[in-house]
Amino acid sequence: MDKILIGGYTLNDPTWFYLSFLLVLAVYFKFSRFWSIRNVDLGLLLLISPGLLLVRNGEETAALGYAWLFVATGLLLLRAVTDGLITRRPRLEQNMNAAGMAFLCAAAFLFLTTKLLTEPPPASTVESVRRANELIGGESPSSTERSAVVVSRSENAQPDTTNEGPATSLVAGGVAKISKAVAQRDPATAASTTDLEWVTARLIAIVAHLAVILGLTLVGRHIFGDSDVGFAMATLYMLLPCTAYDVGKINHVLPAALVIWAIWAYRRPFVSGVLLGLACAMMFFPIFLLPLWAAFYGRRGGLRFGTAVALTTAAILSCLLLLSSDSHSLIKPLLGYVPFSGNSLLDAANKSKNFWGPHEPAYIIPVFVTYLVMLVALTVWPQRKSLAQLIPHSAAMVIGTQFWYPEQGGVYVLWYLPLLLLVIFRPQMTNHFAPEIKPLFLFRRADPPAAPQPELAGSTTEG
Image (tube, rainbow, N blue to C red; front, side):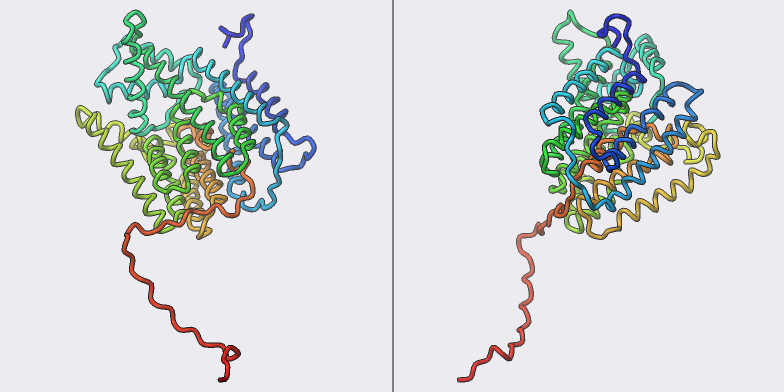
C-alpha cells in the first residue's frame, strides 16, 4: 500500500486493526444500549484480531497468540452453542443507513482489492494454482520460476499449511487456463508462468470475497427479510481485520462462500447438496456439516440432499480421472486432502505450530473426542430443526475444528466468520423449516379409507 499512500505512510496490519476498530465501533456499537447482546458480539469479533497479530508477529509472540486465539475461539463457540437461549431479538439498527453501509462496503472491498493487487499473493494460493497447472495442463514451472514462488512464500509472515481438496485444483486450473488464453492474445504483453499464477490467485480471491458479500446480502434480504441487515453483515465482513489479514487465501474463503450460498438455497435440498459437496471437495471442514444438514431436511429431503452430495463428489472424481496423466497425479490431490497428511492426530500435533505445541499434545485427543460428542448432540437434538438451529449449529461445528486441528489451529477465522455473522444478525425466526418434499413417484398407494366416525347422540332426529 505504500505505492498508493505517498509520503512514506505504510498501512500495516496493526494500523489497519486500529482503523477498522474505530469504524466498526462507529457503525455498529449501540451507544444508547451499552449492555446489549450486539455490543458483546462486537467485542467477541474484535477479540480475534489481536491473537492473529501476535501469531503473525513471529516466533516470540506466537505462543501467546495461539493461547489468545484459544480463549477467543472458546468464547465464540459458547456464543454459537447457546444462541438458541437468546429468545428476545429486538431489531437493532446500525448507526448508518443502508446507502452509507453499501458505500462503506464497496470502499472497503476496493481497498482490499488494491491490497491484493499491490502485494504478493500468499504462498498457499500460488501453490494451489501451480498444482492446478500441473494437474490440468501437465505444466511444471521452471527452476527460475519456482525460485520466484519460494521468494513470494518467504515474504509472507505466516505460511498456510491447510490441506486443500481436489476441487480447488479444478477451479484454480480453469481460471488459470482463462488467464493464459487472455494473455496469449497479445504477444507483446505475454507474461511468465509465475506472473500468470499471481494473476490467477488474485482473481480467484476477488471472486471468492464477492461471493461472500453477495451471499450475506441475499440471505439478509430473502431469508432474514431485511436488506439493511444484509448490507450490515457484508460491510462488517469487509471491515473486520481478520478478513484483511487473510484476504488472498482462497482455501479459506471459497468453502465458506459455498456454505453461505447453501444456506440461501436451503429450500432446495438438491442445490444445497451440490454446493456443500463442492465445499467438501475444497476443504475438509464442511464434511462435519453433512449429518446436520441431512437431519435438518428429514428423510425425503435428506435423501435428495445426500444424492446431490454423492453426485457432486462423483463428478469431481471423474474430472480428476480424465485430467490426470498418471496415477501419481490422481492420488496426490486426494492424499493432500487428508487433514493429517498420513500422520496420526498426535504426531501431527507434535510437529505443528499451534496451541498444543508448548503444552502436552496428548490432550488434543480428548478434545477431538469431545468435539465428536458435540457434533452428534447438535445433529440429533432437536429432532425437528429450523433454520434458527441450523445456522448456529453449523457455525459451532466449524468453530470447534479450531481446537483439535493440529496445523496452526485457531488462525483459520475465515472458515467460520460468515456463518458467525449470520448467527449474530439473525432475527427471530419461527417458520423457517425445511420444505416438505413430495414423493418422486407419480403413482402412490392410495390411503386406506377412514374409519366411520360414531354419530353424536345429540345429532339424531325422531321421525
